[in-house]
Amino acid sequence: MCNLAHPTQGIVLLFYTSSVPARLRYIVHLLFEDISGLTVTFTPSLEEYLSYEGPKVAYCKEDPGDGLFVESSGLLFEQAIFSHEIPIRRFQEIPVIFEATNPDSGFPFDFLAASFYLVSRYEEYIATGSDKYNRFPASSSLAFQGGFLDKPVVNIWLRLFIDRLRRKYPSLMIRQEPFRYLPTIDIDHAFAYRYRPVSRTIGGIGRSLSRGRVNEVLERFRVLSGSAQDPYDTYSFIRSLHQDNQLSTLCFVLFADYGGNDNNIEVDGDGMRELVHSLAEWSDLGVHPSLSSSKEPSRLQSEKKGLERVTGTEITRSRQHFLKFSFPSTFQHLVSLGIRDEYSMGYASNPGFRAGISHPFGFFDLSVNEEKPLLIHPVSVMDVTFRDYLRLTPEESLNEIKQIIDQVRLYNGEFISLWHNESLSDKGRWRGWRKLYEEVVKEAAGTT
Image 1 (cartoon, rainbow, N blue to C red):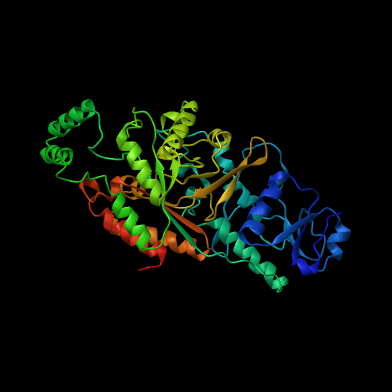
Image 2: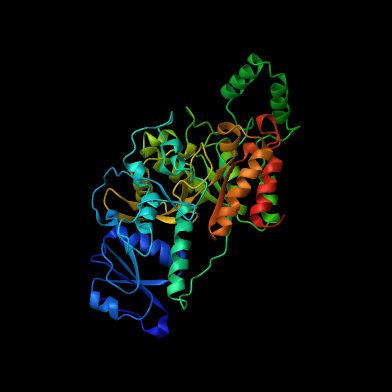
């Protein structure tokens, strides 16, 4: 028998279900408590359910009568990970999965199982294909194949259900959190020319000359002589833009040894220490785990500790370099190192909603059926996606980004943009992208 709150403590939403496995508890808590601000309790007692006069939902196979009945597909009561055939249907022109088979269901699909499937990234546990960086490709995802990667369908489904619930229980009050915007900056290459070892400087000059890029050589000498600013030194611009729009900033620093795709400046040099200290004055900081750490996880601990030594503070935020991660191993490792907030949940190749949601959510480890103390913050747009993967112009990109912002704002979510300090140089292949970023920031901040 559950313990229902006294009416003076607020309205309780009662769920009738035969049992409350971890999967069910997790998704109900996320959707109804974290996002909607409701108080939820469960009961296995049909008598208690039928006698309860407040808002109530029956989540089972057969309609017990009264309340709002949602047919369970069974996914949330399973313990293992299975390969499911998941046809995509349409309900009010909205794509849905886990369609109900019982005609008495008060809702046409099991939106709890559908939401859990996307948010837990169930499909990534059973995926077999990968791209050249051994990442789960967007093209393999249900959202991409179903044409709804650009929609936060979990939020859409939740709103549909809440609307139906409120029609039955008009006194039900839903919390409306404000739309939030967090601009984030990845620092893969802190400087283009400064603080580079002599050997890398000579190598860089040689590459520029071999490609006929004499202007790059001249620019390098001007920077090194102190007569010009390093093109990747865009930090003052970032700081001013964000502060002018009353925004916080979160920077992720690649604090790794040089090699392969990890080629920032030397982590033990004066340049890196000075930069990190400067950033810490006006930005929150996170670690940007190297690509090599995905093959040698022990490296991440060293990178995190190194950054902590420079900052003198604990680092609890991370974003994977190249957005390279695997379920569940990457996130298990982050939890073991004390990372509490993670910002890699997006695709490099496509904008949109990898987990189908515009709100942060806890990491649910399907391998043990347990929620872990790690909050995942979805990122929906990245500069490299539009320029290098989709080959769009800044103008074309702005239109795409505005549509994403509108979707997040519509569902009171958290919009996170991912940009790089180097893409704000307004030089070379990034000419015109600084202006785009200014427009993105103003659009998301509501200062246009």
